[in-house]
Image 1 (cartoon, one colour):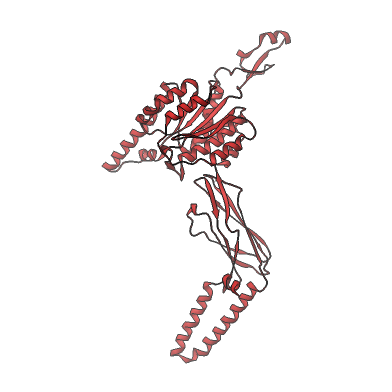
Image 2 (spheres, rainbow, N blue to C red):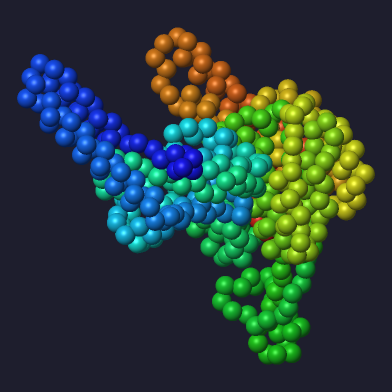
Length: 444
């Protein structure tokens, strides 16, 4: 009996009927002719309520429901959640589904109403977009079954305390998985890169076909075969590429729900996959007050899993970043010339000048690429038409900051430091572009 009372809920329709009967009793006080009719309707309501309870509770548990989630959620992406329902009742039911989704989404009124036919299965799909890494705990999946009488509902509870971790964006990883081998990269928004010269790794001698560079003709092989033969080169392999993520306070700035740090983490995961597919060695580490989350550059099969686990475990208090510590660590631990993709952010030229001696020191022994961000909100402010004096002031200041970003690019270029100035949503594509450009030009 106690279990039944926990599962039994009275619907609004029951209360509407009860309010109508009470109204009729009130009218009967002034018009006695309605008194017997009011009692008759009350008895009918009690009987139908009893029948409704019998239909829902008299034959055991007739509903099965399961929440199907991915093994892990992809940070910053829409993740599919499926609720699978099996109705064993011999009559159609009205279902109200309340899923207790993780508190990180701050979704307080998640409710779905569906009509499910008798003895059938039904699926309902919805999407969640997490904006931070970590553990996401789902609560109960509450299912309220209502018969065609709609007087009472029976509550079912499924999937208690289900935890799903949120990892860096593996959905982007799959999306760009084949880019390293594609000859039509521009179809995905990537630039076509014109090769300048050749990389130094020789692959084979082959017959000349129309379109081959005549500068690669091998005259000795041509004389022996009595037909044009050319040397074929390939990108140099097994080069070290390190992604370095600044997890200081400059990376806390949010865009579209994600912090710059999480954008950098997602881009690092995708770029690491491209690097390994191009037969180079991918590594990473993070820094703020000290260097952490180190993964030595390798191209073994387990490297991607190792990088993903380290990216998942990145934690920070957003302190001021110590670039001198970064310089010393790179000097000590990275002995071979490597490509270093440094994800950070500079808002002003003065901010760059404070760290420039350390960046120049790194660039002496390695190919350094600074990846930093355009402030998209400033761009919107610049493009907006000013309508009063205050908005004119705001627009001028925004244009000053945007101009300083371009000055930072030129300042880095003066010292042989490459840069990628990008919007957060284009970060992944732009960093892949820069890596492929460096590979194509053979400047590492």
